[in-house]
Length: 526
Image (tube, rainbow, N blue to C red; front, side, top):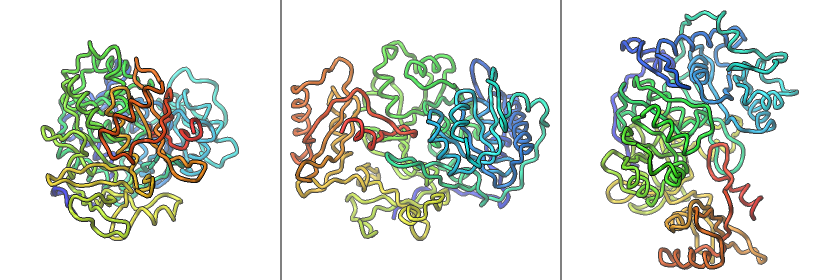
């Protein structure tokens, strides 16, 4: 077992995360300071807290009380932020969902979460409304924004209710072990699984992160992924606001061109990013004229960051990138790079307040330098998947350990290296192969923009590795390109690891969490 650096924390028995993340800024005389930037407007901490109080009183007026769940399904906005804090402030449980799903997907969330109220906007109202037909949930749909369509039964315009709501709201006297919010664990297959987290989890995860990044009130944080990703919600909203920093919001779908525009407009000091968008930024025609000199750190998470992409991004934009590896179950990063100490391709070193160990299939510690399944332990970790007892038993182990099912190895310097998913291992020619290792090799080829490697059974039932590849601009699919890529791989890895089959595709489908959807890849491309 390896233990991360310790931090002396005193967590009170009575604790409300909204007070901790947001309202203590008033004690530090930050009321007049900008908390949010949105659509050309600045919202001070005082204004955000007032909006939080008003929405909290609206929710109470709709019957939301202690431990009730509320589901957010709306575009990033001040209403999203204030609703999140309002839910926890009144002692309810905050949950959120992806904003571009189909009605049957929302039906799943409604039946699964069982929220008393859902907060939507005009972009999500119709799909949520359709998903709610015939369902017991929610009791009410609260619609944020202006220029709304005609609303039906149990649907209320937030903007019309706020003027009649009190601007004062006492925080519910929640305990540190009361449930505050859910994270959703969304892999590459299956439905998202809710992981409940307590109020004290938010303090532990912030303090661990803050020990490395050292946010200040002078920082401005712009996040690429939307707030319904727990990674973006914490690194791009909760934790900056706790430190008195400002957060830049935007409602539109994220594109590289939009990110460059927002950087020019707000001059952020921290960019919360994902590797897919880092690649898109490099390929954008606007990259050569973009001025990113304001950004002191770029944080990358959500998917593996290859050494090749790290080097290309840092060389081009002259920005230091810190890799952050965590999970919905842990509610924090367990590995993270330190400024000035990055080894490209690694996942960084162990974070404060986190214990980890690498184990074999029997749960025994592996030898130093060997690859093993990562187990993590921290007081920030959840303890169950909602309504999934069997998966809970397979993931949340005895004595507080969480089985991530990720394969890692630790080098002699204490850096951890991602080696793929334990359940992704394929037996090819009698030898186990990790798809991630092949994918990392493929991404080193100059023609490869994005790829995924899957095991495909042939007519004899034998597993063959098949790579689905999106080529970069100015490269064309051909038999010659197939052979060129295979030859490239042969120079980098053992022959049995070279993909047997290669198919070029226009794009790779993604899940609501932004990961490659392997099930849909097989359905659409075979």
